[in-house]
Picture: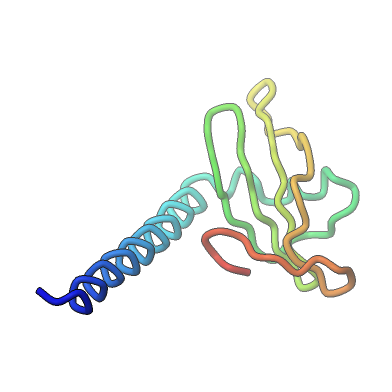
Length: 113
């Protein structure tokens, strides 16, 4: 086998692995959002800084902690919640991913934007 073929095979394996990992991350996020998303509707208002979000994605979820991405027409923000007495309470603002009015212009895994 030539060096060029070997490099091509290695490159294809790396790219295929990345795409598989990316798709699996999206599927995991969509499943978590489908299962638990209703628990977080409207909770972004606990920040007293965000308006009502158009969509949300549950990025991480456990019995006590959740990381949720809220998106509206002016930006997207990631918030952390903790469960206290069986109620989700806003804990902290992790970051603003993107904003039309500010300087934030980032990406969020696995959705890119």
